[in-house]
Length: 374
Image (cartoon, rainbow, N blue to C red; front, side, top):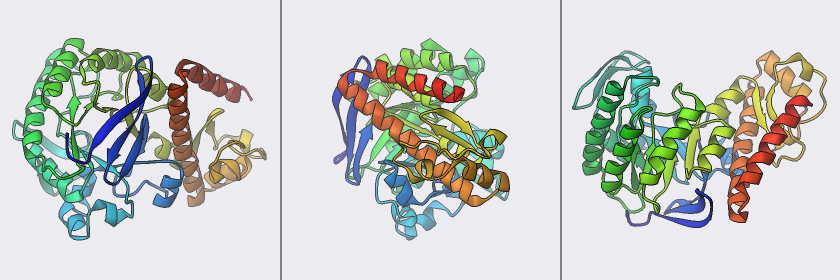
């Protein structure tokens, strides 16, 4: 294990685990949800409010940061933590998914990916070695191997090609990773919707002795049951003593289902993106503030929430802000959503410790059903 980075499990409930990841920049309570700070910002939020909501760690994006303002510039300015005024842990993804989904005229080969920026058309190369270099320049506490993520559904042959390439890139990423106190490198399980490929990938990565392992290539268009099947397939082959991270997931129900299968870490743009588009996540279910039914509703989103945005502003006012296109509406709903996700994770951790995760999940779903009928 990297000096200064460790993981401890202090309670279990079935396959679900409650624990802490320890880093020099602070502990990460697990199961954890990481708000996405794509371009050195959690969109529409002050970092102080992200922390106040209960977040222990943020996610930064290699692809966006390498294009603007540039990893070397961020390093000269003191690193990503100092740059964005977030002194707590940061995980950076490798950039591979965004290259595949955003870049223009991309060319993939054994060496890496050559692509044109979606911003200005400039040409760039991203290899496992360059991804590791960028993440080191940013100063990320948890860094991810470069992998190839294919969208589902795809053919077995395509999933196998991408999985085997990702394993070769995992080895190269591990060799290029700069060991520094408290920093960790995670591998990424690939294999599409194939159980055999997922098992092979998980076993190979477990043998490489990463500090943690992610499951990638899910939440990319497949039904929830396919995602859960792949988790049930891969997780038994991952080391018990290391954190498991499900990338890019997801809805509150996806998160609870994955926790019950042994996942420790999550990230998703869903709460922030939804907030910018007038959608709130609450204990009472999803609330679409654009709907006319909220125009004269004096109730807050959630009177019991610890978040001022969810507790202190009426649905009528939030409806007005959304309909008027006011930036404050985006800010308040994003804050409420990030707070709800953190409250959900806190509830999950408490439930695991008490051995009642199944009851918590049922009660949470019942709250959504009651709220939608209110």
